[in-house]
Length: 92
Image 1 (spheres, rainbow, N blue to C red):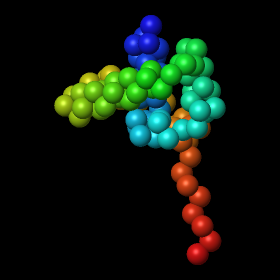
Image 2 (image 1 turned 45 degrees about the horizontal axis):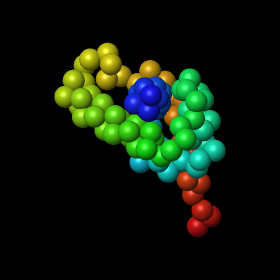
Image 3 (image 1 turned 30 degrees about the horizontal axis):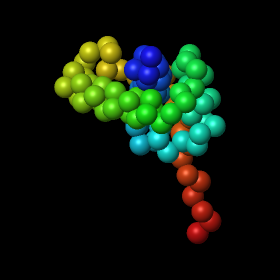
Image 4 (image 1 turned 135 degrees about the vertical axis):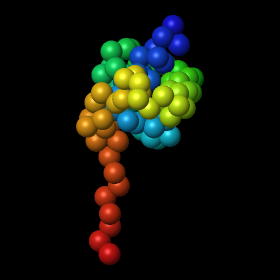
């Protein structure tokens, strides 16, 4: 069950061009929201999130080797900003 949940999360995250490091940096409340948006119940442990990060790394390596394949594309890259916000620059 954990792997199935991780696969759903990884698919959702991949399509939005979110990296594994960015995923793990999200606060817990945001992770729960993301899991629900991915169509799965939020994982009860970080182990599922870590599996999702491993799957993202595998997919990134595969996509580099197969850049022209339709599965290497990011279907909803424009939604990335909804999940990962850039730091606001300070007044300098």
